[in-house]
Image (cartoon, rainbow over all chains, first blue to last red; front, side, top):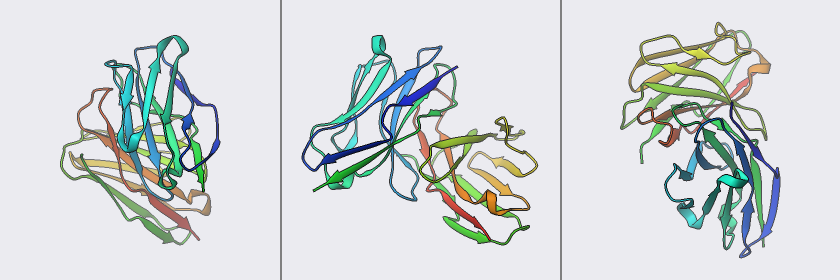
Amino acid sequence: AQSVTQLDSHVSVSEGTPVLLRCNYSSSYSPSLFWYVQHPNKGLQLLLKYTSAATLVKGINGFEAEFKKSETSFHLTKPSAHMSDAAEYFCVVTPGGGNKLTFGTGTQLKVEL
Amino acid sequence: GAVVSQHPSRVICKSGTSVKIECRSLDFQATTMFWYRQFPKQSLMLMATSNEGSKATYEQGVEKDKFLINHASLTLSTLTVTSAHPEDSSFYICSAREGGAANTEAFFGQGTRLTVV
């Protein structure tokens, strides 16, 4: 069985300050991990993915995430938040050899002036 | 990247009627597509896995006679909400993967906001 826990349902930061969105996972097999972003009433867009290559993954729009097996974590970070980053973010896991995605509960990111 | 197109983006229907939602992979073939339901401010819940040329696989608690899925070709899956009721109002999203490997990206449609009145 696999699961994803996003530790914060809401995160609020000031524009220009760092962003940290936390994600912990459990998976019986070597997982693939993804971060997706969703703007209101829109579909989901892939930010980045981890697929057992480099543990530090760089994505679009300046986001990156580090896979830490010992901590079973895949936290999403960005050095400097922008107003356009305000959205819902989902951490997603899929087990090695499987194709079913398991979503975290999501983190709503608010960016203030 | 690959594109998944979902139509319509919004639909309002009367109770008791049926609504069909289409999901198309525009530039790749998808043997498997997924249908999700999302309640306000909540995560995506997988409803069913749509398999081209065979029956869909429904998640526990999802009524297969209520939510009819047809995957007639490698680029099209449809979800029909039959005899819709207000409690079926929700945001429905489809996704597809190019290839079946676990490490491939899933591409998502734009979603369909269904309102049953």
